[in-house]
Image (tube, rainbow, N blue to C red; front, side):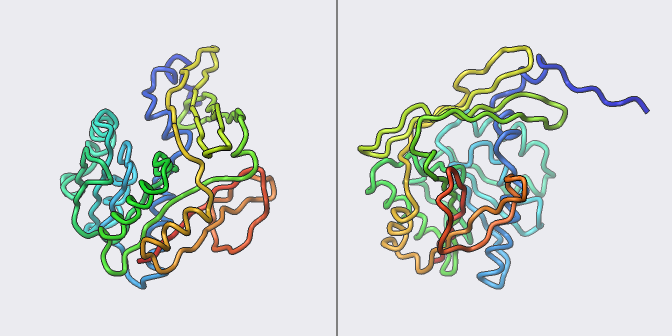
Amino acid sequence: MAKKKKKSASSARSLHRHKLYEYSVQCPEAEVDFLQNTFKQFRKRNARILREDFCGTAAVCAEWVKRHSRNRAIGVDLDEEVLDWGKKNHLASLTDSQHKRVSLHNRNVLTVSTGKVDAIAAMNFSYWLFKERKNLKRYFKRAYRALVDDGILFLDAYGGYEAFQEVIEEREIDDDGYRFTYIWEQERYNPVDNGLLCSIHFEFPDGTRMERAFHYDWRLWTLPEIRDLLEECGFRRITTWWQGYDEDGESDGDFEIVTTADADAGWICYLVAEK
């Protein structure tokens, strides 16, 4: 059997920025695993209705409805372009039954009304676009009201002393035959208000780059700030799930509840807020 050839650099470069992003930083299967397993661990039942806020391409919504015939997913995002891309590249590949159980809303998470859901996920640090405390608190209150009585809000966060620095990190990607370099740049950090400007670039073997494929204007929220706000909004218990690492220093994909952690250069965690 002939060995499968690597796709050319020009072919990789022709990929849409959303596909490059998914290859680089998103794993819907692992994310849904964590949501499902953690919800069942805490609630002794299965979550059936998931709302994915700042859903982007709705890859998680698509994965959610694939898991069970009773699972429903609601995606909310302000960006119509990314929702359209998700419809064509994720929802279009679903079965008719699965497709009917996904609804996407081109709305603001601060005003959208979707009815009660079992779980809400706001991942990829997307809620950090709320740079003022009052606005993030408003979002958490809206999320609280949208959850059923035993619902759970799932968030992620990152930090470490390098998060407060202007740095560039590169990672080689080789996925589905495509090869390119993922570049994360923290362009500007303002210690006065924790303002953080970040960009994602992509570079290909032929030397070409996709500059600022994604750009973020965030506030770098610390874990105590987030936890305090969640408690003020009524969430009764908030647990912090720390990412584990293997002996080579690479993420092992496992997260465990912690109350203390090492002051590493960089870390990623989940916050699980129970109503």
